Image (tube, rainbow, N blue to C red; front, side, top):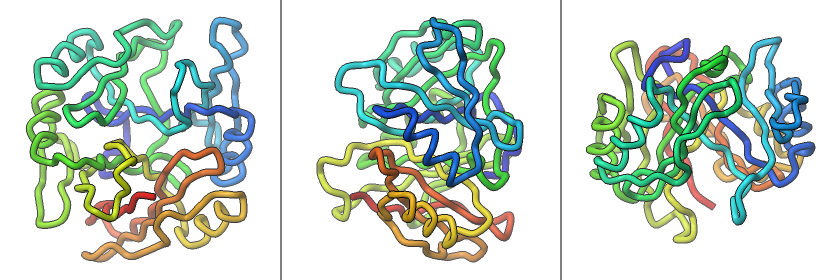
Length: 264
């Protein structure tokens, strides 16, 4: 992720929707050094911001919908959630949760691309998004895993104006001020029950050390630490004790992108 601050059209927020928010706060607090800051208002429903050295990095929330799985969700900053939701539908996607206000923090909608990968739209109010990106323990990259890359290459530029940097194995997503994510085609190594989805990668100082620490805290390693061809990037993919998948990455150069995660 070359972007160092939240940008309109780019990723702005990651939220852990959890069947056990207390356990999620404990796991990620020990893994990344996050400190919980609950919104104590009754109408907030237990929503908790997770701070990294004082800066808001992510959030943990209880599950609000019946059948909702424990998972990380990725949201993208938009100027108008309602108008963007209409563009999603016009481009072949769908609206999962209609646009609504999130207290005084902003306005959001939950939508899905044509393949069913779910993501959020965020219209800033008091909260614009994460206050830290790319630092160890903060969001550093987002990756779409899909079985229909051609549809995604048409859909996301139509909705957000993204540019796509294709290669033989990996597509990078970006805006004018830099790349922030990528796309991986889900092959036969992904079990059929794994749906298309967006996967957040968190920057760390040492992928091997962080992966080992996560394992010691009860996480399952889906992809052991590996160097990405091209140099300067090492990644791993894990599933936390509650069932949510996430990635770790360390970039030693400004080039390169996350990629190559496996399902499980």
